[in-house]
Length: 408
Ligand SMILES: NC(=[NH2+])NCCC[C@H](N)C(=O)O
Image 1 (cartoon, helix red, strand yellow):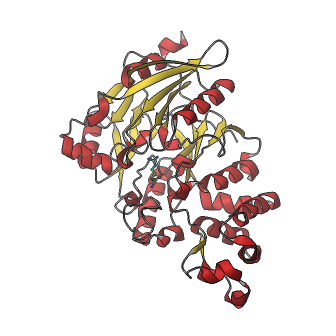
Image 2 (spheres, rainbow, N blue to C red):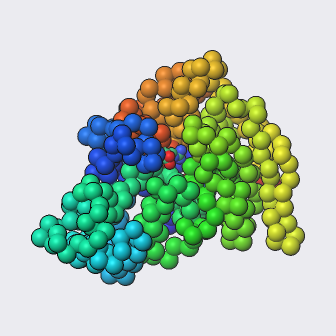
Image 3 (tube, rainbow, N blue to C red):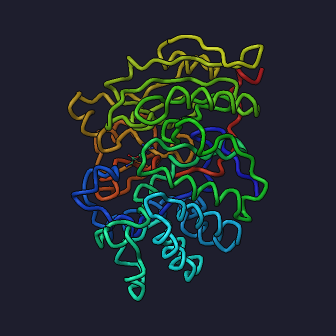
């Protein structure tokens, strides 16, 4: 099985999604900020919306893999099971007594049950009650609704926790505490699941912060990486070293973005919809800058710039211009639709993308520019501030032919 992705727009054939489950039911008005949701989603409706998203992809011939299924299959491998269990038990909030008790609780579970708890978490009252008096100090002092194992509501955004760069998996290093444990699950899947046997890695969860939403494969050999709230300059530099070392890219464009929630990742303001076209938040299209990083003669990353992003990108991609789909929106509509992930489209192929239906103006402009738009509902899914691109990790796309200029 060859897993391979070298662009944002090569025909998508396999994608990794996570159908949201019980972990969304853990959100309350008290914890939603820490858990990075802006509202309390209606779980059943979010699942329906997600099923519509998955069906839209399957209808176009895309194979949909689910994290929960892969994780359950991974946990059937004894080494994976003990690795992930030990990691949970090593949580220093537990202490020895509660840790032993959690260990007993997990030992009874079949792989699917354990996968469910690794994703949805475990509250104190869900531990078997027959052992109540054996819980020890930590257990006694906890509220019954406190988490013994934290839930992972943002696992839904599979884009951020891992990325494929050509035939290498890059398990990222997530910046926010609420999300860090996601990568341990992806790392275990890629290392232990038989489908991914022999996978080589371009990045790992213990390296400097880097999130998949910041990474755009502009074209074969050219990667744009946003730095801001999530990916740090050190993460971008580490990625450059890794991909140059493995021969996966020749140019990295480092793109500073505002350190704000609305623009937490580069893909909240810019996604690709054709081999030479991006959809971009108009309020920043003219001001976005890029530093061009190539591999210097001594193997050290060599930095040039900054230059306007669109110019630097076209030069690195060896094309005349990187076209911007001009959404032509007034600043207020543009701001509203950017917040609702209007710019966060998932390309199934060049000129064919999935987008949230609510972003009426942006979708209309895409169509006027010749891009086919498959609309999906996202009123509940969107409360986590992520759109179709955030909710998908492409694993296989058709390789993109190099543009004629580059080939010659
Ligand atoms: N690639 C993306 N834009 N992902 C969106 C992630 C949203 C998620 N709630 C977070 O804050 O991390």
